[in-house]
Length: 153
Image (cartoon, rainbow, N blue to C red; front, side, top):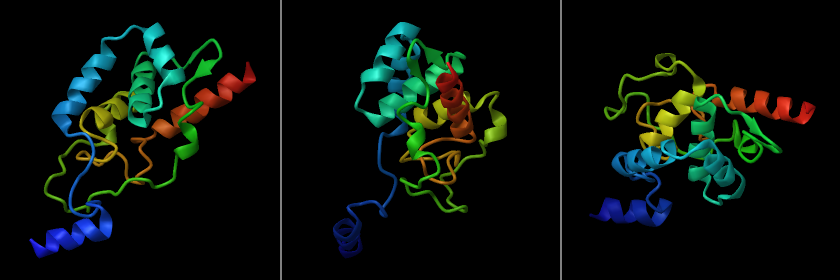
């Protein structure tokens, strides 16, 4: 009890265990986003203030191969955080990690969608976001390409 209390006071629970959306709730949110049509996703992408919802919408659009629509494009609001550690990562030997890795996905957008749908970025049970920036595998590279392409237009 004393250790838990100290941990709560010192770190606001950050070091005491995973925080964020539990996987069951994350799956429900992922299914909601998957069911939306592209125009609804692009509206959310340009207006949401929730960084997790934005990441989920961009991953869904990327999974559909849609990287730009009109003046909107993937990465416009999310790429700035790439490579900056914002989330704690589990230890390599954490028993809660499973055997999924980046090579198990056909696209980085699919890896990002799974990462978010399983509770990421605060709960990276697949260890798909080693640097803790909230972007799984090489999803940041896809966002960079999207930004470069959009700025050429």
